[in-house]
Image (cartoon, rainbow, N blue to C red):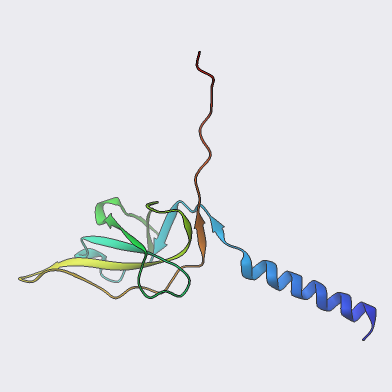
Length: 126
């Protein structure tokens, strides 16, 4: 193999590895297309590790906290846990007479990391 071909293979492998490991760090919002927003009372966000089928934690987003943006809805991303996750969402509504019912989990988001945010400032106190 020619040295130029070897270099091309190495550069392609490095570019692929950088793309595969890229994650969003500290996202602040979720965006989704709602199927039944008019009858939904809240959305539930699940935080999943890797390919897990059950979330490590969930958070609730009331419909009143969502904002329509074009054909999507957006809301602040709750930050109940720190770590590397994917997120999935359920739509929940009230059914008569059985109470609340929720959809299945949505497809997962891309990977993201929630880490502690920097402090606003530090000062010395006498």
